[in-house]
Amino acid sequence: MEYIKIDKNLSIPLHIQLARSIRIAIQDGILQTNAKLPTEDELGQRYELSRPVVRQAYKQLLEERLIYRLKAKGTFVLPKEEHFNLLKILFPLTEKISYNEVSENIEELEHDSKLYNSKTMPNLGLNKEDKVYHTKRLYYGERRTMFYIEIFQPKKYYPKALDQKNNNQIHRTIHVIKLDNDICKLFNIPEGSAGFKITSTTTNQDNIITEHSIAYVQGYNVSIILDYFKQ
Image 1 (cartoon, rainbow, N blue to C red):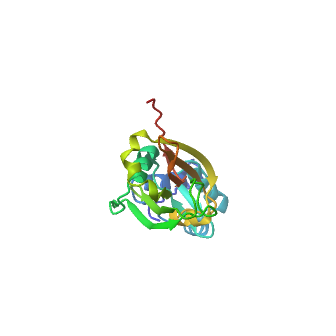
Image 2 (image 1 turned 120 degrees about the vertical axis):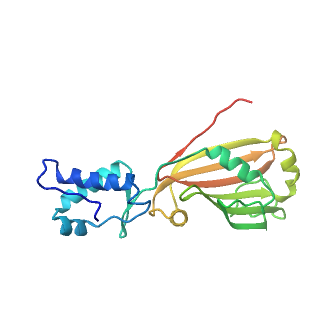
């Protein structure tokens, strides 16, 4: 905790001194992303600070989006804000049918060909004897897991669907939701965290669904860029 500088002879309030010390340590790289910060008791004992002083300092850093808290685990340095164009990432990711072309930023959790099940799969307009390519992937940003995506592709439309991709139409909806605990574990974020759910449906020129995907994006310091354009 050598990075913390507290001088009780100064007129500057103690909580401001504490917050400033931690802020500078984060900005200078002394405290790295996800580094655990001292507890209230540890700071109180070492620097003779009251709990309200420490809590006020941490509250200020939380509001500045420099730190985050995990219940029963502690306080940590929040990753720097990530910006990425979700549409540019999702579209080329899902239109590939050659599943061996997985980059180092993508972890393929599952890829299988299954019989269509209307109870466990989205409405794809298929019969129960039809087969579906089912894929689950994690996509990583520069420093952390950014989103989880689940893809459903009716097998009978491939590879023809790829040849006709210029004629495809994509309908995409985005909702802010409370992420399921299983998704939070994949992102290594607190249970019950907010995030984005992006549902995409691709149809061909005959209005047949050739692909349906559901992506979950963690909401910690993430901004989503949406490009709108006319054809």
